[in-house]
Length: 610
Image (tube, rainbow, N blue to C red; front, side, top):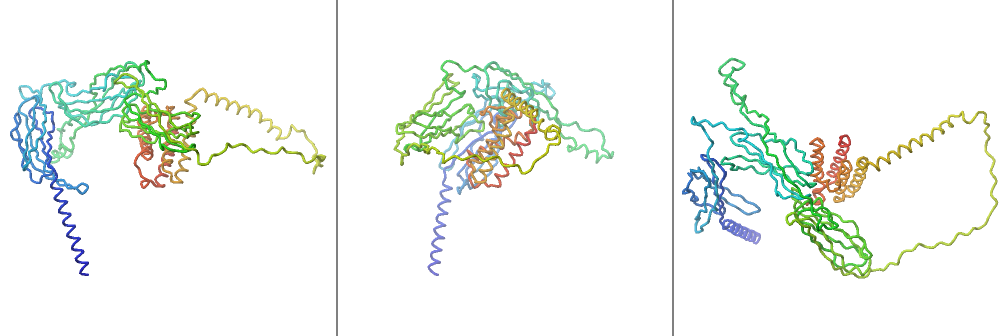
């Protein structure tokens, strides 16, 4: 018992020493300092807030910001914070100052030397842009200003030198000052022909200086791709809402009492209201150049951007007849929807199978990242010691030329098959020989005789049989007409094929779910969605993507709830197939709910006119 107590005290002492060492190491972290000023664009008379944050020091002195030229400085206010992240303690002290510029123009702040203990740190240099105050008349009232000077919108493209199928960015900027605009906007007359445009995403709001005036700027950006060459004219109408203060009611309240009159004239009953307004927008015109014919590779498939190709064969040693895998990774920036795997074809030395997309790592814009494909190859003989090189080509809009990439060839050490198999031949059978002949039996007598007491044509069965030939002719005509329509109208034929292809994929998903094969399950669900909407909307396979499908359904004015659900289910399937979703996050009940949800969604779309 005494030894147990001594052992317990020893462990307690060791834990205390370890804790002290950990705390000492935490507080002995390097001291760092950061300076930030917001806003950096302001009018004369406005105040900016300077924030100095010190990390790794418990009690730092105030930073020397009091002597800044061209600025009146007040403060600081001090705030301390301690946080523990992944077992590591971080202590920070924040100093906040108010800066009021004394003149217009560009004002530089820093760099400033900041001494903390025995260390001398440096606050980074920043620049403020100060504009003139709002123009006023002699009586102190604001001068009359044209409404177009208070708010306007602008469309910009980046880059400006565009080629067909090249990805570019469209940015819509909305500027306003001295007024208040509602947060919601809408675009009218926004159906540009010859462009494939994704949904807009909003960038962080900021202040900008335009013509010596400070404007609040809201910016929205989207990815676009020119489907054809030629001039493009964009002239959308930006519809916004102007927020104005509702006029105060001057009449008395319903009780004709001074107390209640003041109550009903309170701001609760005189809130702001919005009024729709069209924001002036300058039309945008630009030209799209066709891809050059000179130097175009024969197998060019429309990829435009900047890409890189890497490939490998694994394993590098195999027996004849055993499969090897060719993995190719295409990375870069461009229109990934037009990228196809550079597959190898069948030959005397190799038997090949269709390639499969095994990994897709793209950013939120679906324009930057990588795709990885794998193709299974089977060497037919020992002569297939070298796998041919794979190639990929694209058009580089910056260099304005086609680029051909190549990877390989790849050496593979082949050995004879473990057990050679002779070619299979069909077994021969001996010819059948007759065993003998006999006299055929005479026809046996009938069991009973029937007397024909009436004509055959008067029986109902006779006339029923006469109806079969014309019905067969009608059915044959309908089937022939249907076959003719299918062969002549591809869109109608694909529309008829849509529910059948979806049902086949859903049955495959049910079988995979029963065996808990999650990758096959979600791949079958994705195939059900893509095959249904690809056939239903007559889309090429490359256009059946979450963003591309969202754009097509929105153009067809499908309900927003159905459109968003389709995009969410496609992203769920892609995340389950190619993402990091582990098997612990998957269960049969969740899979069954997803399967039922997709089946119900497709049934609902059968009732939607597209």
